[in-house]
Image (cartoon, rainbow, N blue to C red):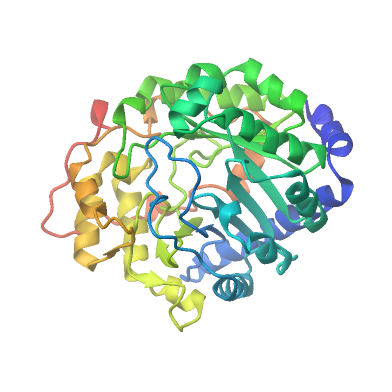
Length: 419
């Protein structure tokens, strides 16, 4: 399997792009994590990775979307992005996830990527705006990997994303990327309507045949103004996802990413352990994309490192999330998150202005935390990488109790089976 993957990388991708990935995302990315770990040992904090939603606009209206895609357009302009990236690089960061809305609706996206050739960007996209010319420009840049969202077959894609010809347009964008030998990924938000079609060995084999180099399975989270909870996976299905990913990693020549488990199969939350936070299209610094509350902004005149490291809201979020669960606090303990928002008077960063009401309406449900059924990594490379560069960094062992952050509040039972 390792030799097949190496052969695929050498034969099916542009060698210059492969080298840039190895150097920027590999060598410099590991160095970013090492600097992060050193900061933690000194009692300092700045996340090694940042996810940035550069625009709220989108051409689709996906079920369960929490972004104000139809509202007045908000975007982070070129000047603000330049400052953000420069100051993050000064802290040692080189990797940035670019989200939306649909990032390719941001007219300055390619200029942003071009002005920071020493960074590596992963762009989350529906692929509809990746024309042949755009793919050619991405190849020239060399420092970007498109991660194209596929949410089901032709029928399901139209239903999930409330559009016409969604599958065909997405696959055309994917083919444009592969034609120009970009290091390309495919991601899926697994839910009730697509799990049986896309969580299969046949789908993995098809991605390999197409030339896709990696895939990323997210699990659907019922949040936002129209959460559609009936699409959420059951605990048994979430366990099935974990078992499938571990098995496929051990036998298929394609990288399969996840962000919710360590090398021993124990659940974790990337925001709770401090690996990443999220910046919204208005410049607000949020714990993660589905938590649309903030007390800080990238437009603060202070240096970004100071703004994030001195944020009491972000610090107490990490402590609270780690002390409450190894899973997703939004799903399991929405009442604790609401109390934290109210304690810090964090502002609602949505344009609809209903995020707190949405949080109050949420019913607790299980997330990836399943301590009785942990599935360790089988693939040696993933075990090594997660053990040294993507784990909990002691966050759960060191987290104070909930009462230390939210005094006078009694913790409540969480989810099914006490989770």
